[in-house]
Image (tube, rainbow over all chains, first blue to last red):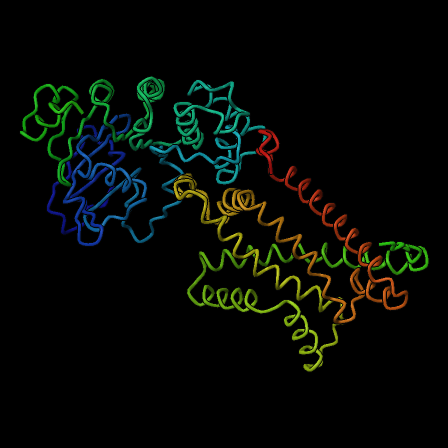
Length: 260
Length: 227
């Protein structure tokens, strides 16, 4: 159950059919020292939805994403993810992280482990899978990202695009309810970007709930059910991908026009 | 120059020399793993421990690195005797070597832990792994791999440093050499042999450590990265 704090001035957007949002921001604030990066974010991501956070550097989109799995602690407001209130006294970060996968711009694979070991380490240690189970799991998720033939390779033997797909497989192996993607193609050249985006697109089509921070506007427009334009720590404009064709605010018009 | 080498002492002091080699090997083998473990624990304490532990480790490391090993050995050996503990010279030597190696490998391992990109730890955290799981599966193997060449040097230095233990009557190789030359007066020949034996032991130790690395660091073996 979502708990709305008594002093919250924002009325939550009540879902029509009674399903709870997978991610729910209510007036979420986050500061780094004196710098307020999130100045009251309201946002709902429903199960099965794909939300794309777009905006300029420093707009707070990555911070917002990182708050979702507790990489950044919020300073104000309410944040509920997978039915867990991140500011509740009995909140267990590790329990949340079992359900929320995240993929980073810099892959962050474990270089001393093979692709299969990278993918199965957490399922074995955290979820207690045995050797046979984890081997089958690796085969399944590597198939999903199109890297079945790379199971015994080491990360340094792979291209950037392949490494990023391994990172996606590694997250998928935890069977997450929600996937977060933090500018996952920013370090890749256009050709490799394509192969990573295809994998993400396939996941989206398969019904995975996702929040992604991206600079790939065409991709956001095509895949996202909800495009969220962030500006100066606020949700400036949000809507379907088509909103990018008809921006309501000067800032979004300029942002779209700048060709980012 | 018409010096004639005389290695006949090799025959007459054979069992002493063999015992000396054995003691040197024993001191080394017994001290390496505990020294490494102590050093790793200290590195972790200094990096992630509470404030008091960080201070304690820093004091320990600096105290050991800035005093001669032989003084540490004497202090420990005679100090413990004053305290009434009778641990024997061999045990005192091992304890001193472990403490000494621990301090040096603490700094080496600290460098290794610090060299691991933060993003990896963030990723592991996000996979819901516990700190303990992250340490054993991600941090320790990589840190050890990154600084392995420095560790090997440190362990070989430690083996060579066992040569001072004859000062507390542990008759290892150097001690035996001193005895033999004081009886035969063939110092030049004797210490040549002793030096060659140390060279052989150090080479063997290096080979053993290389073999251990081949077992421990699978990736380096498979990718044929030189150690």
